[in-house]
Length: 119
Image 1 (cartoon, rainbow, N blue to C red):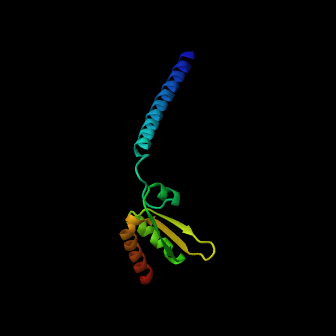
Image 2: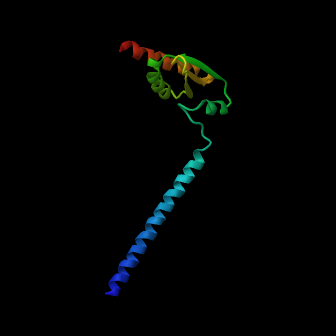
Image 3: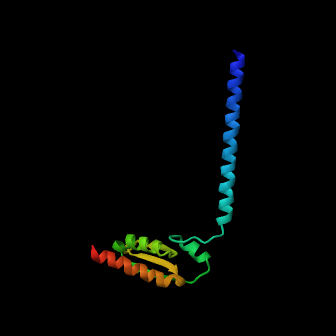
């Protein structure tokens, strides 16, 4: 009877060792991927601080509340780096973006306005 118990315990140990090896391999891959991509620039919505860190000149545009959701989708579609700050006094939004992205921002605004007019 102890022979069966020993065999079961040994099988359980082997399964545990094998699963921890798989987990370790996955963890190594994740860390490797994070280290490779840590210096790559982020695109899309980000904080004003992260936009400033990139060292590019920032420009801003004021947007009304009803346009912000559509505009956010369009800016992500056109890969514009932007930050949205809400003015609590009057409810308008200020969209900060890199001056280099100006043409893509205006394209996104144009598409956003087309969609809001068609509704």
